[in-house]
Length: 420
Figure 1 (spheres, rainbow, N blue to C red):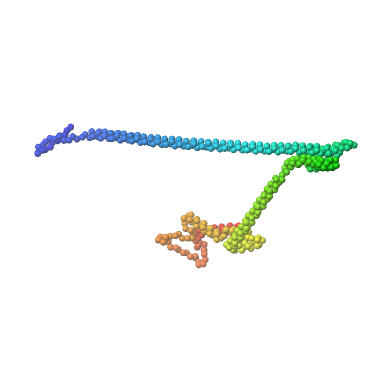
Figure 2 (figure 1 turned 60 degrees about the horizontal axis):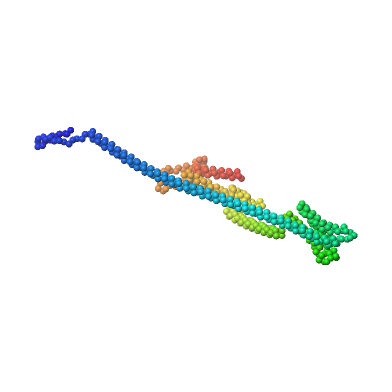
């Protein structure tokens, strides 16, 4: 509807059309629609921003996950490389150990083979030496027997031809007896002596008869053959005996003597060094003792004088620790490093520490107060004793620290009295 208004123009009313007035309900609906649209817009923008933020977060999460995956892959590769390196190192060590074992086995085998070869060589040399000695003995017997047979031959006593066989054979039998004695670890010297005696008799017969019936060359040669055969065989037995008994050679004896002399020299040098060290230690101990005695005499003259008296009474040439402890207890009433003065110092220090822990002044001293701080207005009242010169119970007041100090002193005195 259009409102019509009446206005007066020059005193006469004139009708005019006025502006239409908005309907409040329509305005309210429009405002509601506008607000709804604004809310929808804000909601849409929020959802869009949320989606953008979610996309950003998802992108960041993907990047983080990708970075984590890359790191995990790198860590896996590194661990795999380390594991491979460890495996390679273990394989290398195993191969080294195997090679070392193989080298040790080969060395042991070579040493064993060398030892076996050495033993075989020694056995072969011994066998050859035995064969050569036996052969030489037989040859010498063959050379020496004809002259001996000629010496004993007589048509009237043909049986004497057995005498040379008895001499040469007897020497051989006795030497075999010596070999049996060596093998059974029995004395063998008398067997060898008898063999040499028989060989000497045969040599004497060859020399006498050879000079008489033949020429000097034959006599000397056959006499030498009678001694050389048993002698060479005895040398073989002598070497076997020394080997069995473990007798050292001259070179080994010299080396052993040299080693013994070197060991004796080293032992003498060690004993000399120990004696010098002992002498130096005794000298240092005597010097330290002298310095200690001088320090005690200087720091504790009364105790030192009393200690000298006690040492003289006990027959001691020096002030021993027992004498010093007894003298210190006699003079100071306590063991060394303790005295009445030291105990007082310790008690005072303990009182100061206790006061510091309790955050209070030390007993018997006044607290420190700045000059600008007003003091207490309470006046001190002095109550003298009832009678001049006579104290009664309660007329003297002790501080807690003083009472504690008196108690400690009394306990220490009682303990010293009990120890005495």
